[in-house]
Structures are given as C-alpha cells and as structure tokens.
Length: 85
Image 1 (tube, helix red, strand yellow):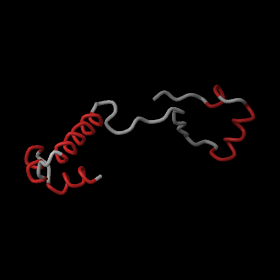
Image 2 (cartoon, one colour; image 1 turned 180 degrees about the vertical axis):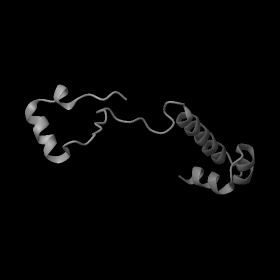
Image 3 (cartoon, helix red, strand yellow; image 1 turned 120 degrees about the horizontal axis):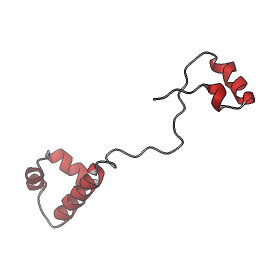
Image 4 (spheres, one colour; image 1 turned 90 degrees about the horizontal axis):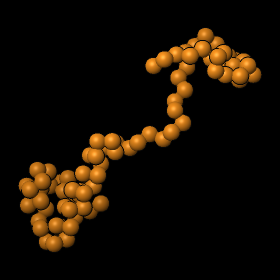
C-alpha cells in the first residue's frame, strides 16, 4: 500500500479537523465500495446454492435424507438444515 501525505490530499480545514483526533497517527481510509460476499469471486457461492437447490428438489421427489447425505458426502444433520431452511 502506498502512503500519501494528508496535507497533499486533504483541504486545510479538513486536515486541521482530523489532526484534532489523530495527530501524528497513521490512518487507513477504506474504499467506498461495498465488499463482495463470501464465494462471489471464486464461484463457490453459486455452486453451493445450486447444490442445495438440487438437494431440496430431490428431497421433494422422496429421496431419503440418509441417501442424500451419502451421495453428497454430507452429514444427515447438514442435509436436514439444507432441506428445512
């Protein structure tokens, strides 16, 4: 990360106001944009949403929770959470 001198970036009145609270301190200003949710960049989120929808659909077609757990390598409790959510 590249540091910039606050006096080069901020107007004088704003610099003086910030110095009242954090004179001589290093500050980090986060970007204004919203963070992406977990798995959005890698595609994991959409993969798990699709898998869970498939599990729910198969459960509605009378596939047992035990069988779904075996086929998807999940615990029966996890399958129940997916189905009844």
